[in-house]
Length: 508
Image (cartoon, rainbow, N blue to C red; front, side):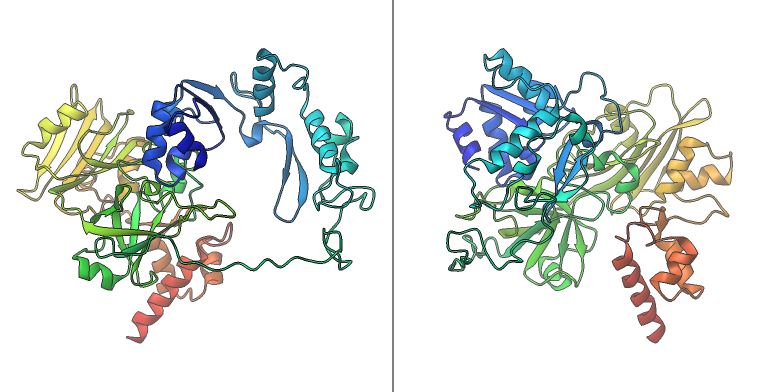
């Protein structure tokens, strides 16, 4: 946070950002964005061209992703492992160390940055870890400083320290009862606990907690591009306890507006008794590439721990209000298209089509004209259905292939997205199947698809409920019947919850 304050006040006039997306991930994210907008020089090294931070860069440098570069990684149990590239470098992308070295050389520091191979950097790093150490610091891999390129390439995983005392690494620290102080004793530091700096108020009565969901990573610049990982949860949500939601007049699935003293966002309400009363949870992943006004860290105050510098991302006083809309819609487009301005939207990555979930606070009186204005209907054969004042559906065809599918209602829609997307791959036959597509449902005789639970194998909730109804009474039985829960295991909690819900219904 100190860096971006210095950027904002003009103390820092050039910043080079590598491998991170602070416009999305840092507290008070709107202020971070404004600081970068005003900075005279912003350089971004990234593997993804289109991120919220890269959009503000004056210079973008294409970097290598983890599967494209050579190096080493160290995990939380001190294990150093060689990282080996298994993909060739794409285009002009280069390793970070190479980019830094080339810039340093052009700035006149060639002697200090004359690296030709990552093994040379590792060797220097290892040597520095032992410099003036003399057993004073736990981290010491000076025993690896003499590795040549071939030995570095063949290095097997091992745990630091690696030095004269532990030439093959050390599996367990402190097994001799000594710690890294002159007297060999541990230091227990008394810390006075303190409450979060900002307490809830009458205006901001709820506590916002941010975190992760199972199928996305950080700011979803890569995982968000994978259709299979977007099927489980497709847009930002706000988890509320049902009693809090009732007091606020918010129903499950409605859009909400969350606001703090620092910013605001839009998210869909998800009511669950798992959420403690008085608090709300919003995932940290969504950004301006995937949704309108969905960056939760814009609500987080720029408060950090005095010792660690860790932001107070788990505690922000907020208010949550129902965000009233006149309509909600989903559109599927064969060709890529930008989202329409002036409405809420969330882009759901799909393999077959561009897919937006949308909602608007202004009424639309003529949907065909609205679609023509924002997405273009020229050259399409149109099949539409007007549901009086309650909704409008439209399918656009060209030479027998589906080009566009649009569905609008007053409330959130319950569509069979799998059936709709399948129509973009193989057009349904004239008659009942096309009418089903217009309705947003599966064709007659086809099993309706629901919310994906197991992303690994694409198993949805109706399939799981059907298997439970046929006698699968455990996660093991479901795994044997459908494979769900047998790969990464992240869907097991949901499988257990569905099993418990079905058992409760049978008892009732």
